[in-house]
Length: 510
Image 1: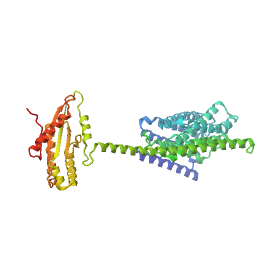
Image 2 (image 1 turned 30 degrees about the vertical axis):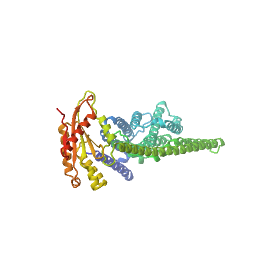
Image 3 (image 1 turned 180 degrees about the vertical axis):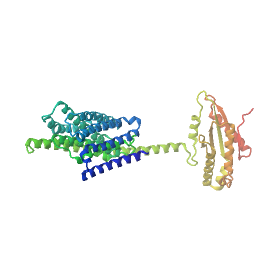
Image 4 (image 1 turned 120 degrees about the horizontal axis):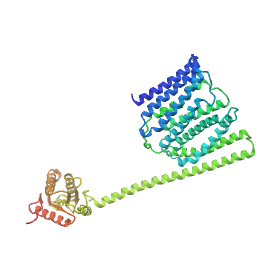
């Protein structure tokens, strides 16, 4: 069964579970209504199934966080199962501490480790945003301490063990809050609001909200309504759903999002100010909102916030200007590189025939010199258009230029990719054939003659070629370009002497 099908089946099972649960409550079907905690375990079981599917499809090097998250769900489910046993079957409401709390505390530690390992794998740049996140987390910690922990400590039955358990839950809440901030502000802007990051942030927010609701109900001695029972498993199921998306560890291929980056930057910097206003508001409610010193403090924070916003706007404008200048400079550099390449090409290419010019041929001779201690063959063809002056006089210079272009095209068609063809002078061409022996040189000259004879545009104007060929096996010490050119030139002279329209291979005398 494919991963997509497994995922869809698990989602369908959870939706059917939610629908069935509320139908049972609506129609007050017994005995299920009396065992709501037990029925609520079905959601935990579906979450475990999600993680079972997800862990199997994660790359081995990236499985650890998801294994820890799976352990978290199992521990939480064990605690919930014990709670259901006490409340639904024994009719006892366990006090804190109880055996259930052992699983809840263990669940906290595995959750924290799982979050830490997952955030490390996402490649979040924590250093750049650490101070702003610390201020936000510090503010939330203060709110949790004053409005959640202190009321619990003031209860008459409070003890060290219950305090530890409540601190444990608050620490996990704070960790969830920090994880949400890191996912939102620390992830690459190209990852922001992708399905994985968004759903994981919602899951962490769900965990945070559920714990706060549970603690508030506990502080005020209220009983949790049964209608919200199936919602406890929602963050677990959602996190399990996220685990079924295999991570490849690659950087996102999407383009950067400058506007989103700017919005996230503003949000990260201004968030501590928002929490500061919240704390000031709570202080004002507790003491006196209209106290002059309190109002002065609020106005001072407002002014500092405005100052920070102005600095952010100025920095954003500066960064936009820098990016625009960089873009313009990159375009200018690209244009300069293109022009430089064109200049270099024009300096080495004959304008009319688009073959190498005399300067490029001279450089090629130098480049083709054999390395020290190595013997290499080099073939040379000198090619002359027979009676080219007569063609110019008879047909005109435009036709003469056309003939030279056609001859150049024929030369290009018979040589290899590593061979070098150039225009050596007015109607004279040269071909350098690295590694070519006498037979290979003769074969190229023969194919070139066939090409010329098969070109109707050249044949109709009586164009023929005389070709002088030579080949030498040389070393770095015996390599002599003047000698090669003289041999090819002598062979070309003999080809003309023998009546032209042919090639001659140089033969050493004696």
